[in-house]
Length: 428
Image 1: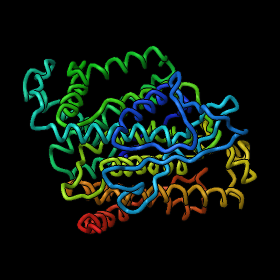
Image 2: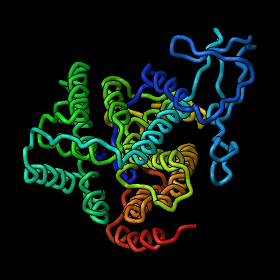
Image 3: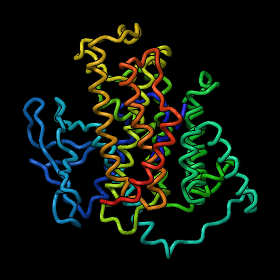
């Protein structure tokens, strides 16, 4: 199992929708939007952590809203792309507005982007942070990063190759993030997973809080603690990943893509948000910070969707199905068909649509890569191109992802590097 980010780190975990913590993030997003305006048809108010309509709604009627970025002077982002963040919100029978997973996650993106902008603006006035007590010397801190290097090289060979194209400071930070994500994933997907309880995950989250307070428990924690002190990295995506691990203890089915999207956010989109501050944004970029974060999120979603499509057979043998149940039914397929593992015309048609969706997320991600710091664009492009090729390999296998594992050959990986380098030099 590997860990997904801007550099194609991916995790495999089950996620539940509709958890309370995202409602809190959603409300925080409103407080964050003082420089933007919200447009609703009808008055609304915030009540008990949820948005409720004060006007009468007929049945499941929906209403449109949009965020307008006042700094741009219009409701479109830099490339003329309309941002209807809260469109398609449907009222529940009692008049309660139901947000999609994508809408909820967007508020996490806003929070991360705002934090990065604030910290970059106040960098010159930042307080001097205390040394990490556990390590006591720069030599031991170097040893901590060396250990992260070893773990990454051993367990994520393709990803590790991409990190070697980064500057020394950036690759060490990415190694530290990768190692924490891998350790978190191992709690519920490793050899001791059967013994993991919600209480154990609570203790892991408390340990995470200590990392951000610069009180690391061990050497690997210390590397991450140093990393988050050197880059404008927020704790929220890390908390969200732990939340995903809690849900992984029992969830193994997804009713629709809305549920699956939230799953992909927790296990892969979060790593994209963790990685943006390390990758950096080009000083000459005219894109908004939030749009770059959105692209990082899209790459995480694309990577995880690709993992899901590649590993259908492997997951089924573990009793798990990471595919939208309603879309399977629409294609005339059932769980029995997945467990039977037969490639039929129905399956091919279903897979064609799923691959098309994943490629759409890759396309969205690619728009943001060109806005990254020049030192980061090459490795990120390389990872993106390599991961997208897995979809090509699924097609080449005639959509048999039950008994054949799609992978990119070593020659193709090597060829991807100069192609990625050429793309990294061109900004359009």
